[in-house]
Amino acid sequence: MLPSFDFATQAEHTLTLIIIGGSIGGLCTAYWLKKAGHNVIVVEKYSEDMLKDHRFSGVRIPPNSSRLLYLLPGMMEILEEKSSLNLGAVYVQEGAGAVIGKLVFQNEMIADFGSQYYRIPFSHLWTHLYHLCILENIQFKFGFEVQKIHVEPDFVKVTAGSGEELSGDIIVGADGHNSITRNCILADVTGDSEEDSDEDVSTRLPELNQWYSCRLSVPIHEMEKDPDLLPLTRDSLWYLWMGDGIFHTGGREGEDQYAVCIFYPFSKYGKEDREWYEQSSSLLTSEEIENTDCELRVKKLLQLASTCQRTTQKPYKLSKFTDNSNQVILIGDAAHAAVIHGPQNTAIAIEDAFLLGFLFSKINSKHQISLCLNGFNEIKSKRTKMIIASDLENIIGYALAPGHDRDMRNSALGLCSGDNPVTDDVLAHILRGFIDDNNYDMQTVVEEWWYMWGRLM
Ligand SMILES: Cc1cc2nc3c(=O)[nH]c(=O)nc-3n(C[C@H](O)[C@H](O)[C@H](O)COP(=O)(O)OP(=O)(O)OC[C@H]3O[C@@H](n4cnc5c(N)ncnc54)[C@H](O)[C@@H]3O)c2cc1C
Image 1 (cartoon, helix red, strand yellow):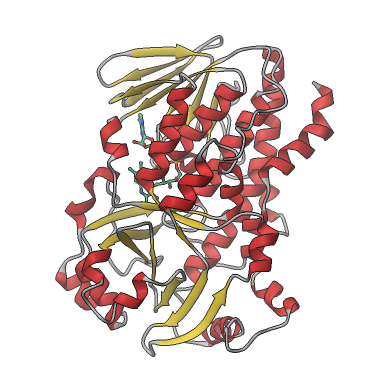
Image 2 (tube, protein in one colour):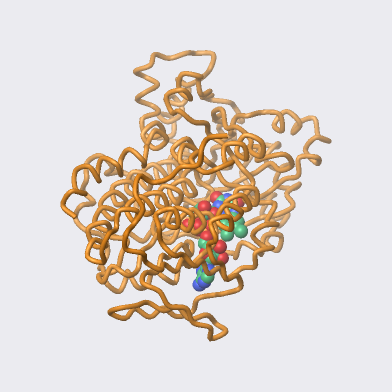
């Protein structure tokens, strides 16, 4: 087991932080803020059992996040034992049903990343993080749905539906894509800033005002009964079945579930946004399955699904993730619109948590909060733009209609075919976004920022 990670310093000025939301982002933030030397209270609207037993859900842990999770005691073992490894991707063009490309992560690539790419059931990740938080004596209040947030000059207060109140110094909104905390920041900022013209991440893609996805869980034992589906259960590659205005992904997630996600950026299908506990109530109807443009294996998977989670997301471009008084901070899905069920939604929440924990481990007086939060905003703005650009490129690019752009995409993906090895330069060009996202090392980024600016504190 790796030794437990400690920040180089602990804050000399102890703050009380209320974290709204006890999912992956909230738990990681709680753990690292506690390690940084602060008092932390997590309030979560669901019950502990709902989160612990939430078996048929799963998240991706790409290398940029697994290298941070490896810092947590016992986490490497959990990832190794309970996850499926993600060793690459197979690209299939719907209609023709042909495999047009196959990207297998070479050992050198994994070695360069320094950590693996996993797909893990939500409950295993959540349960271990929760256990670590309990060991750190972090306080939890489940069934506490925040309905009001008060920000006063010297304190913050949250009020639950039951009328119960809690006060502290700072609120961290880790309350997901329908965040209530975000309203505090929106009240202070007016849309995105001009910085959006940042050349590294600018994109020629059309604007999406909202997009839709859904995630189905298919029991492995059902798939094993069907000779067409059995090979998929043994495959460590992630499948992308690319259609016209829609695409499906599929991959095993842990011991007993196969995840199928449907992305339909241009809304041919339903527009729903369900709570996470409502999964089985939104199974696809036979009409929806019948009308879905996909190959037979995908249709069979859709029919076998035991749960289905539908999500609608809207982009909300924030130029900063803190309110003007520096008493409210957003992280994870509350802060950015990384595509849920996509490659980086959980990873970026884990990065945010580490970033905040690191910076808050340096706080020696109340006056230093604003400098630390400048660092948080600066680092997080750049990183968010990177992720959103590649997420949108994916959801639009994998759902292209027949035509020139789709032909170009397919011939580029064809270069990745295992039968047709390409030079490192070509591969590097095709994979640039993927490598940049997965190679990102938040620990190094924040340490460098601290080295440059920390001495000003
Ligand atoms: C039970 C569950 C299952 C999930 N399954 C998947 C999945 O299969 N695939 C996938 O890609 N993503 C899934 N996600 C989302 C995924 O966890 C996030 O996209 C990502 O990990 C970023 O995490 P987050 O903590 O920022 O947001 P989230 O995981 O969305 O967590 C937000 C948390 O805040 C709580 N909350 C919201 N509002 C309030 C309030 N007013 N007061 C108190 N608490 C509040 C929510 O109950 C939730 O626990 C799931 C989330 C949950 C909660």
